[in-house]
Length: 238
Image (cartoon, rainbow, N blue to C red):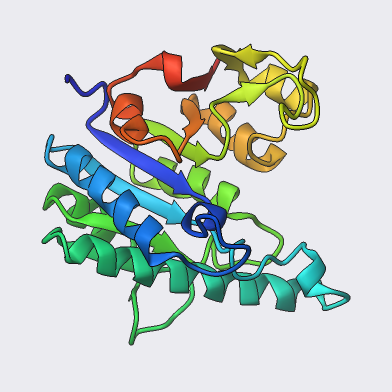
């Protein structure tokens, strides 16, 4: 297999680490994700990851109740740190050097996010996991993925989801929904397709950063995405 990219950013939802559970982290799923990432890592590709926290807590969710939005978002950031450390442990058991970099200061668990240091880690063939989103409330981990990908000059964002690409409607609710092989950022915004939030899409559009949306739950899909196989998902470009 020939990689299509040299440096990638993988956006991993918290739900992806939940497996079949209704809440929390399934360490077997984390191990499976780590094993797939190792095959990509062994190709010499530089890998950065932004991990969500929706499996534990989400700022805009029922579990947040009537909490202050900023407070709820900070709790969500802490959830992403927990997921990042679990993923780091799974990767390091496979003998892959990994660094967690957090946008909020937790020195016992993670390094602070410093752009130049993150790039240096990647150049030294370490996997970098970005935790705590952007460090600011009211921004999602999708926005964090777009921001970090641009900061480290990644060539693509790979967004691992539960479905095999972008559809005209929710394929679970609407059996007539059609899948797009390729779509523009503008179409995603106009059709209000729930791929990433509008600010994340706009950031990618303004900087011409492609997004590949694919099903994370099918084995070998990460490596296929890295090799530019469009059959497994949807590519969002200009």
